[in-house]
Length: 455
Image 1 (tube, one colour):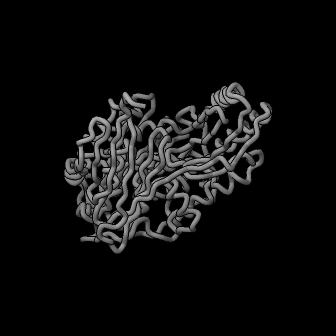
Image 2 (tube, rainbow, N blue to C red):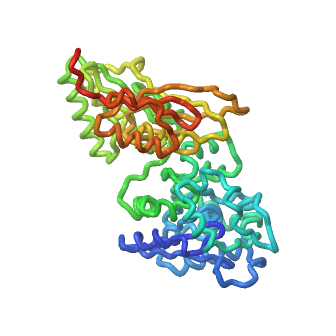
Image 3 (cartoon, rainbow, N blue to C red):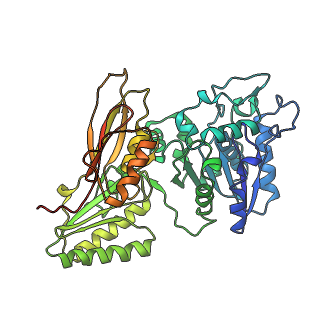
């Protein structure tokens, strides 16, 4: 299948250097475009318009054997959406990375300084930390060295969709990077104008790759995998996002409650054997649906949590899973008990000029999520939310958390926390536990579960 790759501002086709070969190795034909005015040797770029860029993508679509996949990055998402509108019958799927479709009557991008009709790459200090995450100094230097000033009119011209509304029939995948897909869903629900085009698209799939604004440079393997997994390229099931309200309003899910990071149900068991039988049924259902929940088996009963996306967002597959698990529990005579459900999260206040999240992510062995959270990749421990105190309140919000880990994990966890900006406060109790402090003086004990002689 032909996969057209459209880069964002300051980038040429070179930006896909680590992604395109992986697509080709999987039997597809990648087309990494350099849009008009974005070649390193191009002369006067100031006269290049938005329509010139859109026409270049349309021409590439027309030159390929339909249907094609069209991938846009950042401001390239707006260019792609306008090209898709002109050729909806030839596009099997549009994939938007770190950006959104164009908004009718509005420019694609605003706020950048224009110099002689072009927009140079700004200083790195002007980007948010979320944008540059994982890029590093070497990556910033390399990107700056290859960056080409973007013709201002490409992003400042008002966008206008051509053709009819068949563009809304083209399936879309959003790959969220410096923001989480749940952030995007909340912006859509709040009516934010830049993302309202999503409300009319009939089939939208959300994927999270937690990194900065340039995932083709920072996470090329994951980005290629995400592209290849989308229908009709891959064979995976389409998982369309649904809201908590839509989940609760679906039939057959009365046993379930949406909390942080998913939908949950708890079924009481009269015996351990009965609980095991439900777990077996859940495994069979998950295999048939190709959709696998988290399951907690205890003598008292079984807790089930849906898992569609890393951020905890819900999809239609979660509804189908919940319906079938509820039916299986009824067949086994197991009653739901929603009062048994809870999800614990920890809010950590900090001064706005101190970034403490890397320390806590390292100490807990967590992964950063979106712009404010850190989570357990295996979904066992409470999620962490980091709240900036504005104005800063000196010595405010100090806390102490115990993190219990196996002895063979403790040393690596300590080393990671220290490397993330922490400091050792007290190691006199080692190897039972070590007391560390974060950059702004929160306390964390890394406790190893040793074999005690006494009771």
